[in-house]
Image (cartoon, rainbow, N blue to C red; front, side):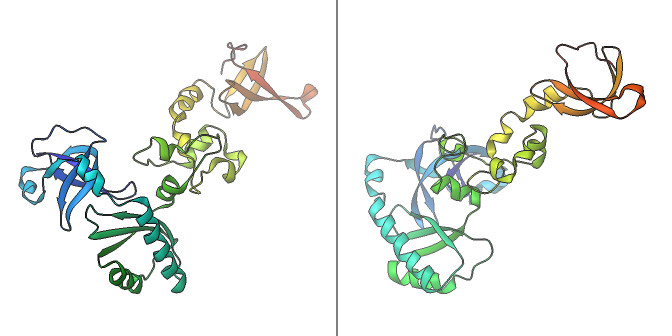
Length: 269
């Protein structure tokens, strides 16, 4: 059975609902039925589930109407909720940073998003929030990337953070990507984003660098350059050149020279 994936907040997980005959696209706003009642969400994707699991999946009720948009909680009320929750966090001295809040369509459920380095005992906080708002309270711990998506501004490039502008699903960024693009020497501060992790943009040109690196002789390879025999000891992927170590004259010492492969395309192993 084909299902639609709906997300209630940018940092929340995606929930499965049946299409119920609606012709939907990613980005459409819909009203769905949850255990807390009707909820306003956004279509984030599509998928399929086995027919024997379809019985537990609730359907999309309708595409969001003008009246539904009017029911959404205004930013002023969100700010008031965040301010009150922060006061309690300070009062209880909890090691957590409040990032965002999400109200259900009719305000009977409130989900607070927070960031923390470890686990937090927030049981008393939930009790106080439940009494104050007279609503179902949920606290969701989010990662540093989701925190940057919500509260971040501009990246090192001066542009809006990619995670805020267009990245929907975070992929794994490895140190291998930074090594392949020869930027490790810049230091972690230069290649890390506001979230403190390796920048997402390291994946954009990774495959291109890999293809260019394949054109270079491997480190340790013996090559002939203008009639001289040397050993490849370094790569310059973008410049498509290599550092070659040659034995010094009269067999004493050695010298390293950068060789442009576009000019010396006759360098052979």
